[in-house]
Length: 119
Image (cartoon, rainbow, N blue to C red; front, side, top):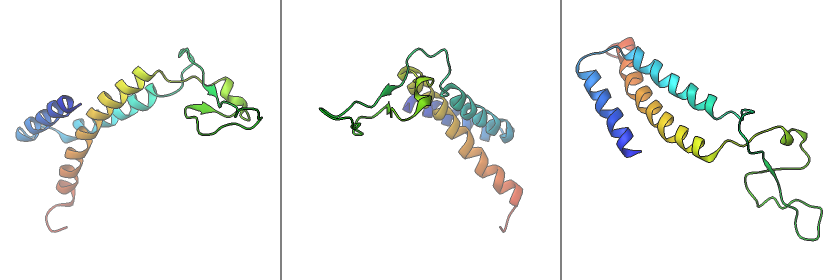
């Protein structure tokens, strides 16, 4: 992730040196965040389903200390797919790693250009 951030930062420094259009950078950052959210939707072609919360021993109560599980009370748990861990990690590291630097640096400088001096 550090290498990805270093590459993005060097690209941003290069762009700001040559006064490229900051709006394109912001659109690229927004696009990477949109792609992140689209990838992390529970699409029907994902194969794994959500697990139900395990029952406590000798009980009908659900043990809520287990994570990544769904309660038996909810009917929609049968239809929701689990996002594969590799896809989640990839989208979090790459798309968020590209989205934040491409949004934060140009947004601040674009805002200062719009407001002008003295604000």
